[in-house]
Image (cartoon, rainbow, N blue to C red; front, side, top):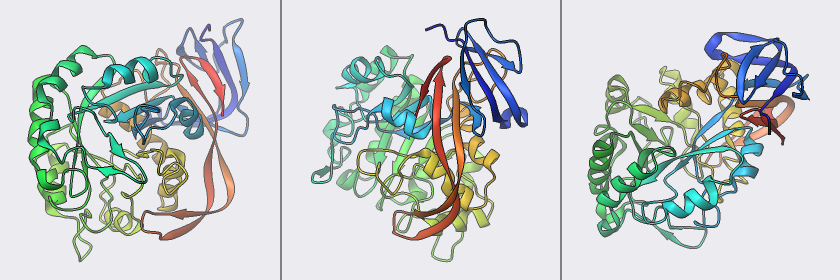
Amino acid sequence: MSGDLVLNGGRVIDPAQGIDRIADVVIAAGKIVGLDTAPPPAAETVDASGAIVTPGLIDLHTHLYWGGTSLGVDPDAYALKTASPLLVDAGSAGPGNYAGFAKHVIGPAFPRILSFLHVSFAGIYGFSDRVKVGESHDMRLMAARDSAEVALKYPDTIIGIKVRIGAHASGPSGIAPLDVAMAVAEETRLPLMVHIDEPPPSYGEVVSRLRKGDVLTHCFRPFPNAPVDGYGKVRPEIRAARERGVIFDVAHGMGSFSWKSARAMLEQDFRPDVISSDIHAYCLDGPAHDNLHVMTKFMALGWSLSEVIEAASGAPARVLGLSDRGHLRPGALGDVSVFRKTEGVIDLTDVRGEVVSFDRRLTPVGIAVGGEWRAA
């Protein structure tokens, strides 16, 4: 493929540049040329009129080891469903099976895939609708040396280290797996993504350990281990972590987004840094569905369209240190998302079953990856 593409007549929203207008987006040889510039002679043309065209959306928390883990979803199908040219796998694979993930999933995929490597040897291996085995329960699986070696072997795709902590994920091991993961992150000089589920340990104990640039994922959890106390106040450890530069990621998933927590946090001006889905096989049909659906939920909470786009494009690009993504400046990678704002009532359900009705939703049209177009 040439990587030459023109997206004609869409509403271009690029929060990084303050752009919100009708324009043509021109891509040549896989890179952004600009808006309303002369197209390459043989460029593919896509009519984007009536649609929204943005920098490529980045879903920071997904599970894509399809066929290698029970929770994996097909990355090609999901990228189109959620209009995201870049998907970040959040620890599906560990050092014992990352080579298979890299060869059989990441390599052939149409969307770009980056990953947080799980510190557990086999990644998230026991997660299904019938079998639930927390991979951090057994400290014998915490593979520090193997993780460091594999992370350094695959620097083009491994961008961080993952660990899961909580009653379900780490059980009798408590917070100890976090010690191992932090040592690997320090050794490899990579950021850490930390899952928190129900206590013990507490949300506050975990977030108090994190460093600048580390990601606390599932940041708007319901009770127990919600980010607010019983009086609805943001926990002080959380505010202290934000001051240190810890990143707060939504990661909706099957059990980690509550309207109650979200309303309380936003009322106190504590916004998540990143909107992501935590998509996996057991929330693909709800309550998460996909990241466009999660973005729609934040619009229902009062965010503007530009704000949700920024939280799912420019913000994750900065978290990952990807200066050539998250904007449509000339020279950026030719990764673009196209979707529509579709009118009509939709019921939006959180992980506790609370329903909020809203009058519009975001629906996919297609994506460009390096100027190669695929329709949803």
